[in-house]
Amino acid sequence: MAERGCRKKLNGSEESGDGYRSYFFPPKGGPQRFRGSFGSGCPVSGDFPIVTCPVRGCGLPLDLDSPQGRCAHGHLFDRARSGYFNLLQPQDRKSRQAGDSRAAVQARQRVLDGGLGDGLRKVLLEAVSAWMEIRASDPGGGSPELPLALDVGCGTGFFLAALHNELGLPGWGVDLSAAAIDVAAKRYPGCRWLVANADRKLPFSDGSFDLVLTITSRKNPSEFRRLLRPDGRLIAVVAGGDDLAELREKILGQDLDKDRAASTEALFGGLFCLEREFVARDRLYLERPSLVDLLTSSYRGARFRAQEKLSRIDGLVVTLSYRLLCFRPASILTVASTPI
Image (cartoon, rainbow, N blue to C red; front, side, top):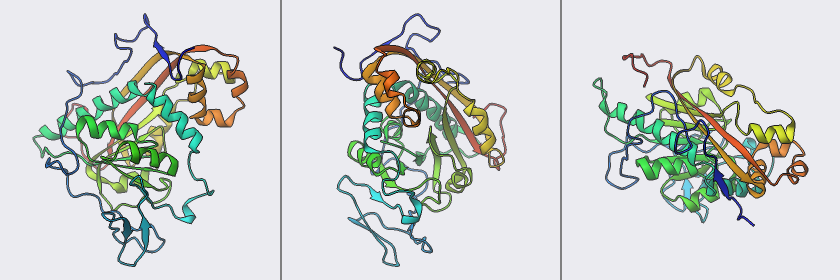
């Protein structure tokens, strides 16, 4: 019997030789590697972000460089053994167990460990690397410094860690789920991790980050704009219309999903302008254990009684499809005709 997470690449499809496709100005030669990290001596764009106290009515800078985070008003936050800080306040949670459950987190991690996030990871690296190259060479004020990244709804930190490990970006990840952040902190100690509610005001000062990511996660346009520096960028990843189409057809009786890209562009309109798009798409044969994890880790699995139907499926070819929407703040004037 195959091990959990076993998968086979589907050959002979429309995809390129490695099974992935990306569109709209992918950089030649693949992602450029930028070496460096926290404390490596490589220049980082600006200072580290000012983390602010989340206690209602406070908002003072919070010192997180000790076992206890403390602000000038004396509010204290303990560092977890794995290294993260939980800054979630009672008014920011709807239940005692906020965010994804531990079972959902474990299922999603098995999905990623099985390689099902590799296609999206590859194209995300392309997108960020392309922007970094243009940012560094811009004659109007290019910066050789490493951009500071924030991943909102980071889950177990897989994609932010890829940017840190492959491109050298210093990164901060926030998520509502303490279970997910605990995994992220244990696996990827090179980044900083916080438990916080992305639907509310995040605990950072204005203009703290050069790059904000939201990968199939929360979308808070006004908050993202507040946190971005004037020349920063936002990358919003949404599921493609054919994502998990085969699984949806088997379980729900429908194959195509709604157009999340159009609704996301409309949501961010006014504060952001879409300037570039990438697509990550793959088709894999997944056996039942992987299908169970895929469903358990998604909201579709929780919303519908799908496990019984899935128990009758031994394996299935499944499409994994994502659209990466790259936005700039609307206040930035486009000075070149080439999309950035």
